[in-house]
Image (cartoon, rainbow, N blue to C red; front, side):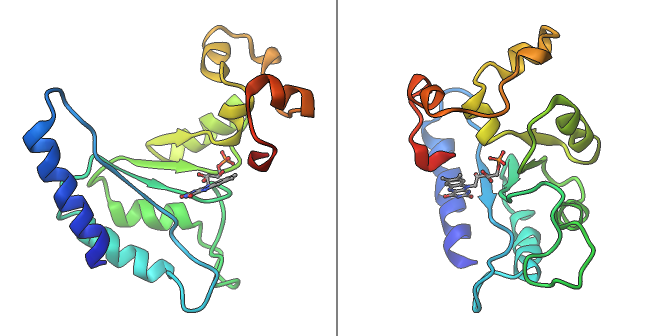
Length: 159
Ligand SMILES: Cc1cc2nc3c(=O)[nH]c(=O)nc-3n(C[C@H](O)[C@H](O)[C@H](O)COP(=O)(O)O)c2cc1C
């Protein structure tokens, strides 16, 4: 934990010294690693306690699915993001990401978490927000062809 906490401390000082406008500082974390040894959910929860002592503006949890259960503990039925949300307990906004594509999926996740991010979907459909705002949801692209990738300037490894 010492390394990320030292990075946060340094970034906080640099923002204080140089930022001329409000400058958000967030932390992005993969809450569990499948490898052993690797980061466990317990490690992450302990780290969150330490993050509460810092001045971060948000925590962004990176997972393949917003609603996934533990990678390491296959017997657990707890949703990792809900466990994290309860531990954060409003200390800073929680951003979640993972397999959210449709406006309905985003809305459902927004009911449980502060902010929902789109990864793949925002690359495939850069105008996702505008299309939802304009009620043009039927024009949202949910998959990409090889030709689309070239048009969008996306490397195939990102699909
Ligand atoms: C090619 C690729 C590289 C990624 N690299 C990282 C990374 O370095 N760090 C990280 O936290 N997440 C990484 N992710 C995970 C994404 O940030 C995101 O959590 C994931 O794609 C799930 O969101 P999505 O289903 O909306 O795309 C990566 C995903 C992809 C496809």
